[in-house]
Image (cartoon, rainbow over all chains, first blue to last red):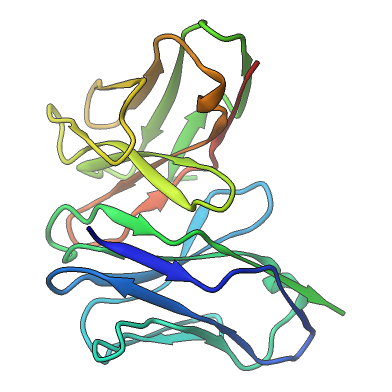
Length: 114
Length: 111
């Protein structure tokens, strides 16, 4: 079945450091890919998405590119802030027009220190 | 504010007790979902409702039942709670061409 594998955390960075969180997937067909963020005590918020190969999703300085050849959707940010401390989830779903049941990775805790 | 509202936010139960978790959305979304979140396992789908009047099992449905009461509301019921059901439960909803939108969760502890 479909699955998502994320790098294990926690990831601890200093403010203004470069962030990469790796995400790879296994899926049949052509899934949509998502990054969700969960701040302490809150629900998940959509951070960015990509619906087809080579699409780049971006939001709030975060970027991820849908790479079909490597089945990856790595999250990057050039300069992290303390306020980026959260849990980040990579997820895949069916095409947006259908079902869209999501399969989540285990999540990666990011801690940014000042 | 528009969104997905879950009640209660926290609950402690004893083994064998029953409980209904409520979820309501005011965004006129067709599809609604229930997930559980456990450490190191991400979110796992319990049940979903693709549209009003339909429900389907997800990855981990055992021990749960759901009701899609109307387009706005989708409840999750634990008939006889077990310690293994201690978790954080999230409800989500979506419309046809948009990603899922999540509530803030219900923290459930079963002693």
